[in-house]
Amino acid sequence: MSDLRPPWTRETANQKVKFAQGLWNTKDYNKVYKGYTEDSIWRNRDIFLKGHEGIKRFLKKKWEREQGYRLRKELFAFTDNKIAVQFWYEYHDDQGQWWRCYGLEDWTFAEDGRMRKRQMSGNDVKISEEERWFKDGVDVDQVEISEKHW
Image 1 (cartoon, rainbow, N blue to C red):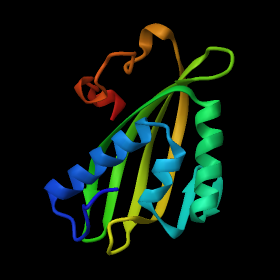
Image 2: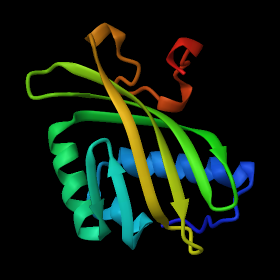
Image 3: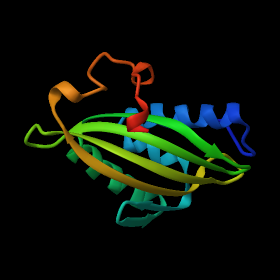
């Protein structure tokens, strides 16, 4: 996975955030789960789960439901073994309706650099095709996100 390990500096915390962004944008739950400890604890909105099998099942269902998923993460804050992230992602549902999720995540890491705890809070907002930021061929890191969306 990644050789980035706590304690974090601003530089390594940013690298870890962008590493996670790239990994999640693969939408490959068989790769993503490996970034978490075997006993990792998650809260994703109103869903609570623990461990690799729970993470894999959750991500498989998520990416089946959230089609066209594209994500951007930005470092919000960090301490020795914690990182807080602000994120935005876009997806469409089965009917073709586009959505943007705005949210924050709180990450706690084990010494080996894998995530031991992940808490996510997010809100989905309907958007039109014209309002999308992360269209095919667009580098999510190059999209200018105005202060009103932070």
